[in-house]
Length: 142
Image 1 (tube, rainbow, N blue to C red):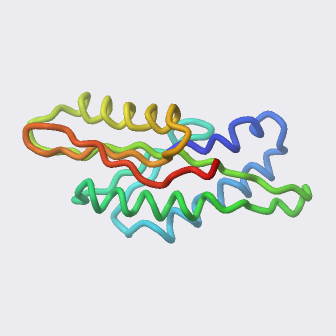
Image 2: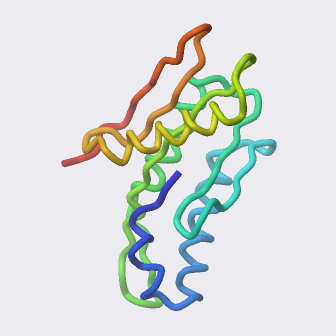
């Protein structure tokens, strides 16, 4: 998951404000995820979300809820500004017979598709033996 709205703010915001933004993102993720789901920072504006034992369609539903929650502007009161997270989400389902490398490549491909597609913001690759099927959702408002 990428939060493109904070990408350009990284250099301009004081560290305290950036921490406030990341706490807001963490609150949203805790609210939308289950206790055994795993979240980690990938880089300054990206996160990795692992949903153990969650199939593609169910994962897409969870990612859709996360997208909807992060699509809402966040008021950064201490600076008198509003932050648009501009989330993009790409995912892939892990299944037997695929390597971790292939899983990573499919998740990266889904995120790249989300970056390119001006109308869709959530993509998930679902493993359907022996083929991959891409699930897209959430049209972007243009």
